[in-house]
Amino acid sequence: MGGMKLRFPPLAQPVFKGRLHDARTATSIGRWLGPAFTVCFVTGLISHFMQHPPGSLIDYIPSRPSWGYRLTQGLHVASGTAAIPLLLAKLWTVYPRLFEWPPLRSVRHAAERLSVALLVAGAVFELATGLLNTVQWYPWPFSFVPVHYAVAWLVTGALVLHIAVKAPEIRAHWRTRSPGTLTLPVQDASDRRSLLAAVGAAVGAVTLTTVGQSFTPLKDFILFAPRHPDRGPQSLPVNRTAAAAGVGRIADEEYRLAVAGPRPYTLTLDELRALPQHEVELPIACVEGWSASARWTGVRVVDLLERTGAPPHARVRVVSLQLRGGYRVSEMGHEHARDPLTLLALRLNGEELDPDHGYPARLIAPNRPGVLQTKWVGRLEVLS
Image (cartoon, rainbow, N blue to C red; front, side):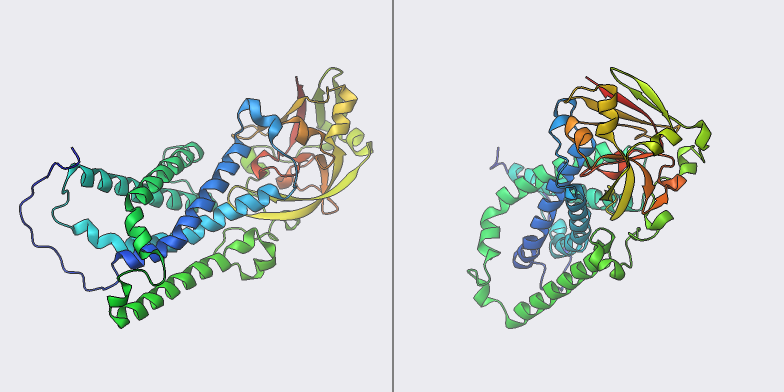
């Protein structure tokens, strides 16, 4: 089947004047694009696993290091952002091949072009939807998370297949002085270096002007990131406000925390405040790529669990008072629930929580995605 020839009538091909639409340039850019996609894919798997762990594995999600999710999700968004100019440059080097004639020379060539089409379409889809997710704009009818996750696997499979098919060509052009490059015009080599320098500068520019949203030493260089780590109520960004969640201001005298366990009990806000208070410094790290550290003060969740007589390896379900939203309920494995850094926080940076930060009480735990740091907590349930 692979040797079957497909015949097409002759057709005049367009003329491309650029000299750098070649395998050498494409391979040079691929040296950077491949690692960027690899980092983005691996960190994306980590993010998806931590947000949506299979029920049997939730107890194996570690609570330390406390900054783990902040690092991996920051790398995920930064590598995806850096991949955008790299992908555009890569497509520029190879797009004349779209006009090759005949378009399909054999069944094997048809399969190769199909894999490339899937790779290009999937890569553009992933980077475009990922970029729009950072600004929380979803102009499509499907759910972002499952589709983005599924297409990531499709792109990775197509990329592995593409590398396998193109391995001999990639190997021939990988080294700085690979066979055949000495016969190229000197001007081509100089222009190629200029092109690669421009692409590298573009990658550096988009990284420098966005990565400060998670790598705070560079926050003064933020120009294009949708969040600044110091801006928001109590100097901390907010994704979902109390108004958007349908909560509003909860009156102190009306608030009750219900703890459901072997010995269930209920606490008023004054009773919560009267319990031993602990202060920790932990980051909020959101899936959109921004993160910031803050000082949190509140009651250790492990103390609340011991009061209700929870078994040592019990999980905990955290239920919000918000009326709607996909993350109004979250679960913690026993390692997070028993970690002394996990608090039911009542104060932020020395002040009473702002309603947009979850007043009167919210969860804050180490190494946990921001969407699972449940706000406006009204109930803790011990799960056997």
